[in-house]
Image (cartoon, rainbow, N blue to C red; front, side, top):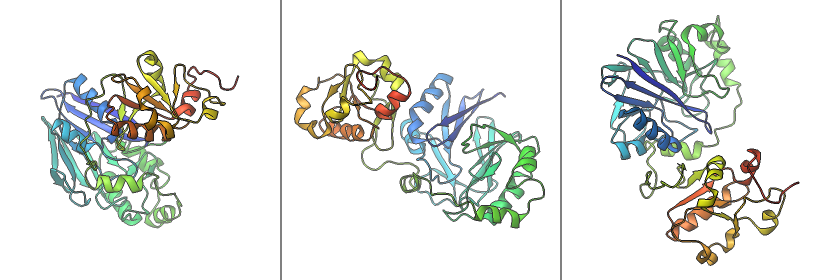
Amino acid sequence: MVLIFRQLIDQQSSTYTYLLGDSESRECLLIDPVFEQVMRDQAVLKELGLDLIATVETHVHADHVTGSWLLHNSLGSEIVVSVNGGALGAGRYVEQGDVITFGDRRLDVCETPGHTNGCITLVLDDQSMAFSGDCLLIRGTGRTDFQDGSPKIMFQSIHEQIFTLPDSCLIYPGHDYRGMTVSSVSEEKRFNPRLGGEINLQDFSGYMDNLKLPHPGQIDRAVPANLKCGQPTGNTPELKTQDWANVTYGFSGIWQIAPSTLEEILAAVQIIDVREIVEFEGPLGRIPGATLIPLNELIDRVEELTPGMPIVTVCRSGARSAQAILHLQELGFTKLANLSGGMLRWNVEGHAVLGGLE
């Protein structure tokens, strides 16, 4: 039985999503999917000919919104979460010793609280791989200063549940902010600066209690959403309606287009720049073919837009143009996308501009 395995990343939150599939049955799981990456995940599943039977959350995340509900809504996959995490709306709640099967393969559930009460680590049936969420990271650990975190409980979780796995077992974390992708039990026992060697509970607690980290920027948005397994407020989003370009759907309800994608289809879309005229003619320049309609004039000048032709809104950073998308949605426009990162990102990536700094 060949294991199908993919490690996917959401660059914005540095979150890893893991795809595990059984080559015979074509059944698969996704661990920790990200809301904004659901279209990517669906594309991978389709290309590989896989049937997503479940999504599994390692914990209630504070730095991104899960894609589990969207995948359940579109593909019928079961949502699996920890019984101790407090999330509502899942199809299955698991605890220590439970197994999650896909085809003839399985993941064993190990409770590893400490980052949150509901953290779990998922161990492949042959103990060759473990998916440690935000408990054990590569040369680090998850933080313990919010969501009922505890250095003592995390220390016990790692030593009793993860460090008892074979030394050769590969560790796949929920995040990495330095570009590292995989470690092993042996490596972390030896080299993890918070846990390795002769470090004891007192050493670990002293380290964790003095990290002085800022709260995650997405916590106020992410935690409430993840306590509902990622179900959006309001109308159900239609993920398959934007077929005119490669765009991504955000939890805010706004489709985003990358500068490189937009550059390839400039002639096929309406580019509406919602900045003020001094910005339009200023140092960041403007996209060739863009029409200037400042945000405060957009509703009054909507008749200048071509019905049925896709619209991409643009501003300096992507904030005002996101608001423009909401206005246009209310007016009945459907083929819409916001330029991700605005003119700042467009310039940084070196795309063509008119005007601007010579």
